[in-house]
Length: 331
Ligand code: GLU
Image (cartoon, rainbow, N blue to C red; front, side, top):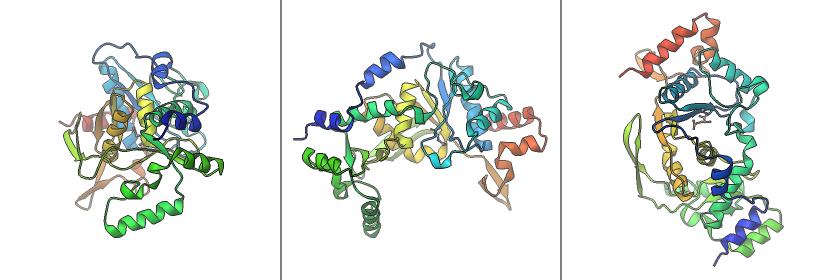
């Protein structure tokens, strides 16, 4: 029998807090009136402000403020390759020019953090991801995986050949059942590892949820042991979303509909962590009509995908805002 507490201590000796302590002592409930929405806009600091980003942040701002709640800006910089210098500043100023004022976030002078739920920059929240991951290990719901990139590539090729869902699951998930001794040996040998969630799902399981925009949605449930922490200890988007939106007391996630496919993973993660999931609202992308057909605005092909385009062309901010609000309220 695996001693989960021992494994958790072995992997996270530096973590001394529990999720309960973090939630009670560092990030307590916001004490807002019932029905007040807490939303967030969570871009990567690429500096590029897509018109769709302005659209989503505007809806987040309206939803929060018309309900007596709060909206904040969170910078999702777990993928350092996508970061550009001054990117945060560009986002804050770009949105401000269109009247989007956040209550909290890296919005002060020189990106100083404003608000009680700081840090609002993911790379500075590592300790909290580790607290929640350690807790999962203690419960036997997460484990270290030492498979190399080559092994994962082989696994994918095998799964493709068989025509089954790609990913770390089923008999291919070989690190699932490593013994404590094997793990200790791997750690001693300095082998890199990622942390994976032990999914309780199996192919064919279904999951249902109610999207505040799209209504009832039913999808295949997750059964893949997805990565929680990468080998450098930085979380994946999925896990960061669970921990951040919980600790920052978000109750309404509003994001682009490219994330709908990930909802089964997210709901399962919230459930395994013993946390209440926020409500989700997924927004359709802004489309462009061209030659009689419609397609998503493309960052590469369409200059009007960038918010800067409207500024440079001299469109008054009010006109752009009015246009976007009309789309948002198009019944
Ligand atoms: N960082 C994610 C993105 O760039 C955020 C998605 C979300 O709002 O949860 O799309």
